[in-house]
Length: 40
Length: 529
Image (cartoon, rainbow over all chains, first blue to last red; front, side, top):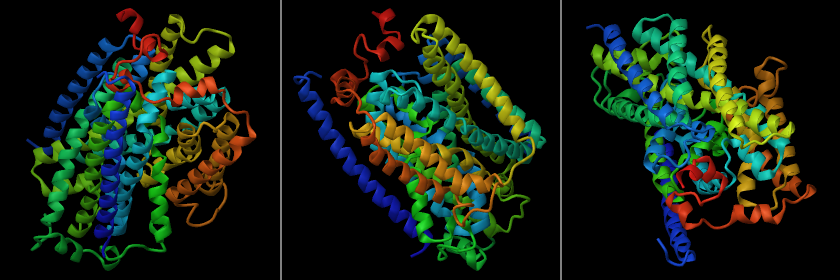
C-alpha cells in the first residue's frame, strides 16, 4: 500500500464516523423536540 | 497583460471587495458581543465554509506543499490526517460548545473556560497561553510576503505590510461579521484552486510525456516516492508512531481561540450538522494541495525555499492571468486565517484580560454599556497593535513556515485540550484540576519542544524538532491530568452545572436565544423586545 492509499483509507474511516454521528445527532434532535411537548 | 499587471488588477478588486464587507460588518456591529462573535447571525453551511478557510491557511497552500517538495509523498500524511483529527475533535464538541457557550454568554475560548469553571485564574492562564497565536499570525504574514514577491514582483517586506494593512482595514471596522463573510468567500476561491491542483496531478501536467499520477511518481527521486512511508532522518515523519501522534495532536486543534468562537456564531444547534459536513468535506479536499508540491518536485522546478513551490509552479503551468488569479486564492487562504487570529488576539486583551478580569478585580459591572464601549475600543486598538508587532517580527523571512506556526499553536492545544474536552462532558471537572492540567501540560510542551526550539538546550529527538508529536503527547497528558487532578479540588455547584449540561431547548435548536439569558441580552434581545 502506498501513502495515498493509506491516507484515503483513514479518510474513508472518518467518513464512516461522520455518518454514524449524523444518525445519532438526528435521533437526538427528535428527542429534543419531544421533550418540548412536540412543539416545533 | 503580464502576470504582474493581472495580479495587481485582481488584488485591487479583491481588496475593495473585502473592505466593502468590512463596512457592511460595521453596520451590523452594535455591541462588543457582535464584534467578537456575530452570535447567531449565520447559517451552518456558511460557517462551515468559513471554518474550513480559517483552518486551511498559508500553511495548507504553501507550507505543506513545501514539505511535500522537500520530503515527497510521505509529507502527505500531514495534510491527509490533520483534517481528520481537527474535524473529529470539532464533531465531538461543536454542539456542546455552542450550547454551553451561549448559555454562559462567553465570547472567547479563554472566557468560556473562565465561565465554565468559575475561575479567573484559568481564564488568565488560557488568555496568556493564547497570546502565542501571534506566531501563527507571523507565519501567515511571512507566507503573504513570499506570495507578493513571486507573483506580483513586490519586495517581500512590502508584501507583508500590504497584507496586514488590508486585514486590519476590514477587521477593525467589521469584526466577526467581516471575518466570517470574507472567510466564506475566500473558502470558495481556495476550493477552486485545490480542485485544479488535484486535477493537474492526476494528469501529470507539466511532466514531459506524462499522462497520469504514475508518471509523476516515477519522475521523483526514489526516497520521495509514494511507497516510502517514513524516514528516520526526518523528525516529522520518522516513524509510524510519530504519524499517529500527528493525528492525535490535531484532535485538540479546535480549542484554539480563533476556531472555538466560530460555534457561537451558529444560528442554532440545528445548524451543527451542515457545519460539520461542509467544513470537513471541503477541508479534506483542500488538504490534497500537497500534491502540488509533489508535482513541482517531479517537474524539476528549482526553488530558493521549498515554501515557494506553489506560486512558482503556477507561473510555470498557467497563462499569466490564471497564475495571478490563483495567487489571489493563496492570498485568500492566508488572509482568512490571519483575520481570525487578529480578532482572537485582540479579544484576549479586550474581553479576557480587560473586561472579565481587570474590571471584575476593580469591582466594576462587566455588562455595563460603558465597559462594553471600552472593550470595543480596546479590541480595535488590539488589532492594530498586534498586526504591527507581527509584521515587524517577520520583516526578515523565517524558515519553514509550517514549523514556525506550531511554536504558537502547540502550546495552546497542549494546554487547553484537557480543560475543554473534559469540562464539556464531565460534571466532576473542577477549577483546580483544569488549572493544574493546563499549566502542567504547557510546561511539558515547553520542556520537550519549545525549549529546544528557542535554543535553550538540545532536547531529545524527535520531540525537540517535531511539534506534532510533542503536542500529541502533551495534550493527552493534559486530558489525563484534568481527570486525575479534578477530584482534589472543590466540585462546582450543582446549580451552576445543571443548567449548563441540560438537554437543548427548542429555541436553542432553532437559533433564537431564550429571553432574558445572557446570550440574548448580548444579541440585543432587550432592545428587540
